[in-house]
Picture (tube, rainbow over the protein chains, first blue to last red):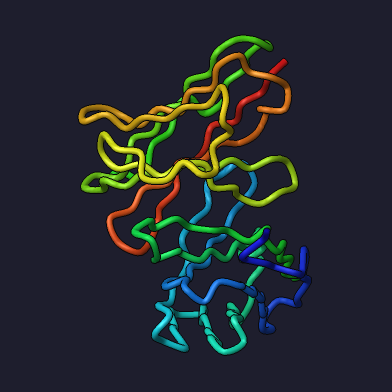
Length: 114
Length: 111
């Protein structure tokens, strides 16, 4: 039962263009969503987050959009840079039943072409 | 402010041995999470702990795996009688709010 899904295992984008990474979830009780970037042999690095009561959060080149009715969130990276090449994970926090467990998607490998 | 520390970074064990993975959370963080990542897969939740308490262990295998977060010292993930299928990267994360911050991981190889 995959509650958080990243349906695109990989994505290639030209340097300078926009990268859009997508994430779908099934549980309407999730209260917080996060995006992480991961390089090989390193731990995930926190990028940006959004509360379930918001629909957009922006931080520099990174913007996260949340569509609660569609149970969908996306990460936009503009402009994309070669250093952005990594695996990106979305995560959702279960703010119910008193347990703040985080469920991760399977990741999308982004390749930014110079 | 030091980040989340994990040690060892690499651990090799023979089948049947015990593996102990340690995690020191960020200063001021009292919530610790353990995740496992198998090759070419995502991060799988294992267990969520606060000081001296296991809050949610729904992702932990029922046998051979245990975790603790004592009042003093690091959190420990313990795997007894390791098997080849336990080979994976194990990540620890800590939080004191909405965001989790991850350590560099321990790569366990069972030979």
